[in-house]
Length: 116
Image (cartoon, rainbow, N blue to C red; front, side, top):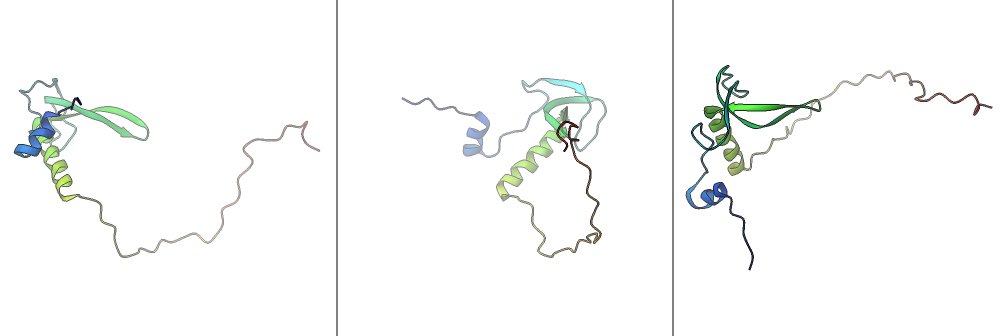
C-alpha cells in the first residue's frame, strides 16, 4: 500500500480553486518589521517569505499580508497563463570597439629555476 503526501493548498486548488495566501491571523510566525515588497510599510506585521539574493549575498525577506496577497495573485496568474518573457523579434545593433584590447600579463610568473 502506498502512502500519499497531500499538500492542503494543492488539494484545495484542485477541488475549490486557488489556495488562500497567508494572513496575519493564521498559524504562521508573524513579526513586527518592514515590508520589503510593494507597499514599503515601515512598521507592520510581516512574514518571512524567503531569502533575497544579490551578488551572491543573502538577506531575509519579509512581507505584509496585503503584499503577500498581491504576490500570491501574480504567481498564480503567471502559472495559469504559463507566463514567460517574450523575446523581442527585432534585433538591436550593438556597437563593438574595433580596437583590440592589449593582452594582460601572465597569471603566474615563472620561477627563476625553470627559466632557460
